[in-house]
Image (tube, rainbow, N blue to C red):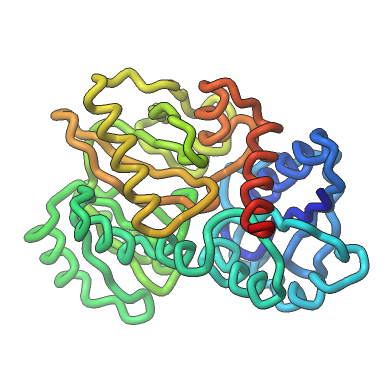
Length: 340
């Protein structure tokens, strides 16, 4: 196949996307496909997939992101070097790359792409919206509150809302971000204002969510594969940006050491959440589990990290599928839709 990998972009997860996209392109090239990797931001340069890339310990700052845009992507998709592209592999994370915007553009251009479509991408990216759907379908999710970033209510009101309906500790985070960008665990009212201000920088809505003390679990969904639950054990207890993308900062147990009934329930919840939102091809569903083994679904990631050490590849490796083959499986899933 001739495949274009879209990576980079303008979101706070830009560096994660570049790292994932380069590995995706390498894998496709290794499998014999004619592959081109394109940064969707700025002047849409073609990326040297042999150069390698490391994610920084912190997300890129606002100033560097403000200098980027994706306005030229539509015309770039029609250039001569992309003629004959059979599939676009979307290696973007967050922002317009994951919220359905670029998926809509690809639809309008008549281009087949990997991953979820416009509606599923938008629904999964909006944490509060997806949690409402989870709750309506009997999938447990932590209680939450939602506030506008541009006009945050008085701190005293939010503190009272949190105290009366959620309780401490709680999580404050942007409603539509990934990689724990802008996320803070707040143990009491003294840390609430600073956490709200941080979350407000990364989106137009702020979520205040009950913190579930316990274990961090995730389930990859790839086609019809029966994949194991993975447990994440981050240094310091919080699986933040640094722990996600700094080698040695987190341990991963695959499969997670869980009672069989809990493991089955977690996988069933993951599959249900994925399907209810209308997702396709692949994704990852994140959970917290309390000390009584009660599971709480946090969110569905429609474009999870895709390097050989990322969580979806770890789960696939556990059932005998290596990274390069996994990437080809996803690309062929998209091609199968194109061919009917």
